[in-house]
Image (cartoon, rainbow, N blue to C red):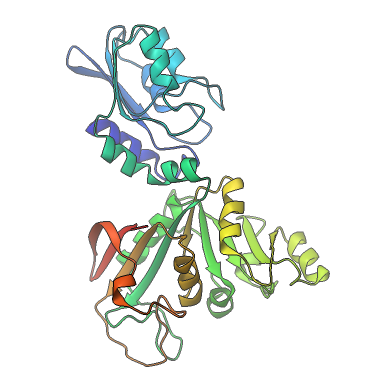
Length: 356
């Protein structure tokens, strides 16, 4: 199962909104085939592995990180090929929360006389697909808050200069996140200040869907985001009555998708529900302190990546990662669990799940 987890990780960034899944086929103590789910819309891990065994897999053991599917989607059911190849036993990491599967895959195999053991490295298998499980169980994107700050908690100098807080290795790690998470969200303040492109700049990386929270629809037609909307998807969320029709038509002509939120400002809970319906299963937030504070206040953040550079810049007016009103008592502070610490060149990254 550990080998199956290693294989599954090779699909990172390409399977969304499907999960990453790995499969290993073992016969007489030897691995006779292994594979993983390469890309959304293509064959799943089990069918990939069983399609190119080095010998007849009849009677073999099959290890898979997620319960085999049993329904027709973009590909045939994996339970079909497991039965067809006369697999002897099946070992499953985690059960599938998708209502179309949800125990039915295991039940079909058992009904046909195949012994199935579940819960093999279940915690590791669920953790690998935290995005999938969150999305399939809630319908909302898995929201990841990312920011880079100095040792004294600043994301920019008082002058506004922010290039660069962290070093090259940390920035490369961020582009890995952009290639993994399906969407990337910023506020209009970030767009006006930095004119970002918000693409993924690593070899083989996938560009995320760019999303801008822009209540008054101030995004310039000349911005890099709008100028590249025909190449990389761009969604702009604004208040329902905030925009003049001429500006909206110009943006739509450039390839921008407009989402109009109820209320005078973009309702972030509504936005996440809407993005979930668009099959955007995860959103990386690279906004400023105001947007970050609003998302945390509304309980929408699921994971945090905090990059910390060994620098001190000072400045009472220098921007910080989370602004807004804040909390009144330290006991009310949000806490991270399942934490990891990464060393990235001179910088440190602390990541963890937000304790709900």
